[in-house]
Image 1 (cartoon, rainbow, N blue to C red):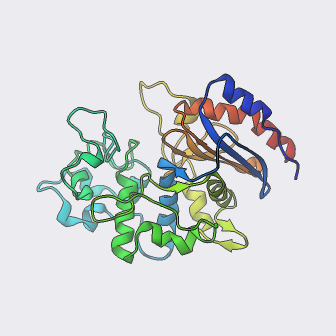
Image 2: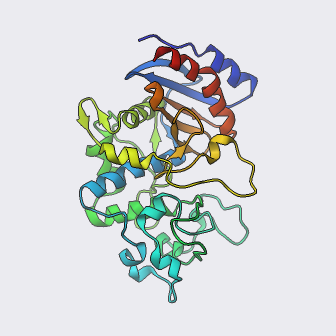
Image 3: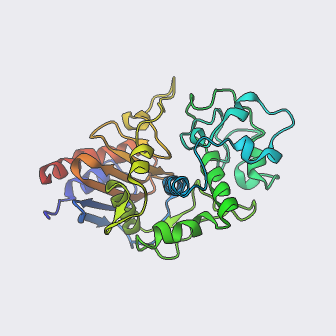
Length: 318
């Protein structure tokens, strides 16, 4: 397999003063490019963790552990407010994994920037599900996209309650160990020891690139179907618009959303995205994927460096 040059990419990163630590490029099942600005150690991949929750949900659906049309209000009736709003009662698991729960707040944010709304680690109520259900639900579930951390945490709690395993442990034999990811750290909540879900998974860029390859191959890894192909297809599709009215965004930031996956505006690509610019970018048309670890908040600039410098070479290799 022909290797690609990352000289142009590195030059672009430096010229734009983007803080990037690692990039790994794979094509046709092989590593074709890599650059490390520091030791390749495990780091918090932040909200790319949500994409791993998506895999757990797909597996749990296949195993009959949960259904997407189940309603959190029926799963946790004891956590409802005294007079629950109608939209809260209508909300389904499918709505929450599309970021379409009907809420208009960033629920369970790590550090809240909204006066009067604490970050999750500042909450006096350790029951985060009960806390989240106190929020108003002004929109019909499934119709309005609003990014928040309620959905992935909810799924983590449901899977643990029904299997007796923390989400991390549930995924160990099903996903992590087959991918060669041994004993990964994944932060837990103070609320009952549940895997955080929305963030906190620590992986190396190499491990992240294996996950990207799994997605590219529609859930298959070294001859084994780890995650149903139909789930990968559905979860990474454009299921809801994530365009925010009145907010100027880069074209790749509002190209659509799936089940904890972001669509890209070109090449039929999609990505997992975490705070600080952690990314897995999957490019089915080029049979390629890219894993990036960084500390950079201009996500569109990071993506543009990939589109301008890496993707053209991948197209030549097709």
